[in-house]
Image 1 (tube, rainbow, N blue to C red):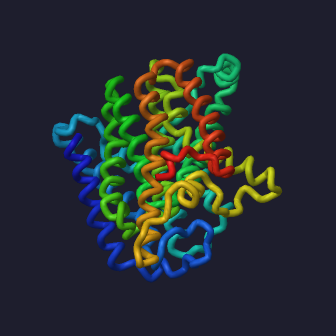
Image 2 (cartoon, rainbow, N blue to C red; image 1 turned 30 degrees about the vertical axis):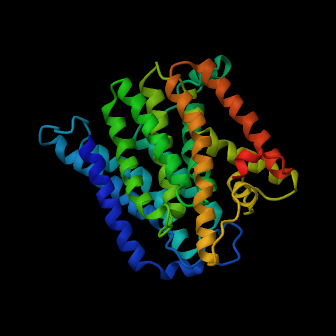
Length: 367
């Protein structure tokens, strides 16, 4: 399985290098005055294509090995690998098209991610069978269409959640990497090497991308990369709970509570101000950390100073993510404990957000 990670990482590194050298012209479309822009110069935003290439290479090598005695012991055939890739393509290619042209409306991107969700129902036979809440579980047993609707909603929504937190070098990519490693750990605990191989191939491809993305910011994942992370992780999360009754459905919920809660809170925040949820702004949690916690660095070059502040922002959110990943991995079978940690995260997030807005952050965090 380590060989598959290496293949995915190598292909991702090489593809990202070609994109860095040959795809700068499209980045000029991304205006200097965009509220989400926290970098200088023109940087390619199609790193998601490199991650997709690395993931595809890993899965196809695993599939080829299946017909040669399965040397990787992951039991993934070529047909199964192609089915997974077919599910990903509508969302990822739609995101990549937006990255290149900046002309694909939000409703079309939502439609394409929903199409990936419908393909997952059809090609991968995904279903939500339980959430460990008695009333809801009874409804899911009575009306299977509810479980199907949740799968489409999750595969449609999680890509946009990753896109929302994709604001600084290494932020969304490292969050996705940590989540993939956590899912792989639990999948191996329950003996599901096929599912572990899927997320580890994504982890390898993401690592290859991060070598160019952090700390120098030579290429960005863009919408295509965020959608790829979101769709694959949503599929893996549903598969893990559907296949293995001992895994709590609150395990993936706690793993992904940071991007999911960022979406929920952003919708609330914008609705309270009378704004459309689709309107871009610069008031997300990671953007407030950049502005009010990460201090100016002393350097004569404005571009270099912006890059250094950008790089110093991501570790704050990595630490925040680990506060959910670690308990999720430790208590992956215990729904009650996982629910408590989800609640604790939501309260902590709101407390930290309000503290930053009111300039009441502890001094040790502002170093």
